[in-house]
Length: 480
View (cartoon, rainbow, N blue to C red):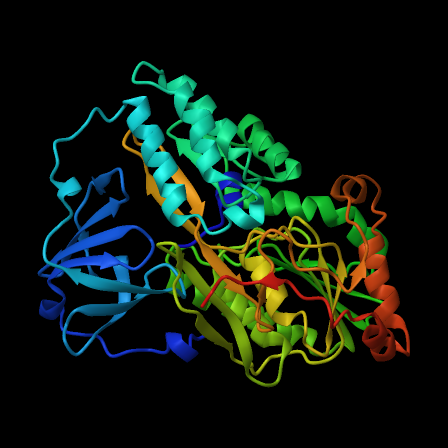
């Protein structure tokens, strides 16, 4: 299941277009060695079982357990006519991954093993994973060759693991990317987690570890931080906590519906993508059926931990009565990027098509902001608040020789207008900064007040049209 690094730190739709369903190929045809295009993975498939290798220019590390093919590795495999190319759908989301058949494993996979804890070996593996897979050196202003020149002389075979961790931590600070992290059995270093989330994680470790899940703790704190605002701004006794993921209510004396969405994951007790997507869309469909009675709708996405882009697509379909282009994506591959792969937003029967204000902030991350970039140009949607976090990419997780895990942003997500918002965030139409501590302490909530004011006016569509920044676009994507 795909979870954002931020949500993992705190616990932590149907596909179409180029991702349309494909007929499964018979398993025997898949036997052999396959190298992914991008992603740094090699599969050795035999009789429905797979040995998975993570490979870069420095290391070839075989994952510890042989895996069943089924849906643990990929779904809907499609072989080329000559049997040399394999196109698949990732087991953890709406990602098309292509493989090319190889005659043998790379020599590095059978080379004599080195000391797994050798600091210089781990530095070179760490540096190479980012060098080969990270997508945004330019956007983040990082000279990666200079990083190697500056930091590699500080490491030798005598460097301790604690000293190596400090070196990596210094490097990670250069990214300020919440989807970039380093973790071990007893630590996690994140490159760009907002201070609010860092504080909540510390609170969890101090007060709730072992008593409840981090996911539940984070989502409960989200609702707690908004409770005084609800008491001040929503209709008396209208708030209903549907689940950890959604809360409904009303404002404006019953004329305006309110919906809080805390994440695009964690809707099912069964932690598998298909079950979570089904549970999420069932809950959201019911929420929207209940909200149909209102003249207008506020969707509060200011603290949203992300999750599955499939669920973001489904949520986008709940605000339109016609199918629309969805998000697109590509990934690092060699010196460039893979071809663009596209999705389609399917309109849902329970969709709300009246005036909608979506509340936004820098605490909206990953799949939550992928939803925002898909709906920002809907004619009935106005975004009020601040820019989203600007960390749209899925995460690519790789293990270093010493067992530490790195998380890498290797994909560019592209909005329907052809631009991307990685590093810059999805901009609001109406700027209203969000100060969560002040809102939690006093209940004074300028963003929610602005949304209610706009939607209570008899001139709401006219005001929304005047405020909508239809010319606000992202930055060029690197996809081809």
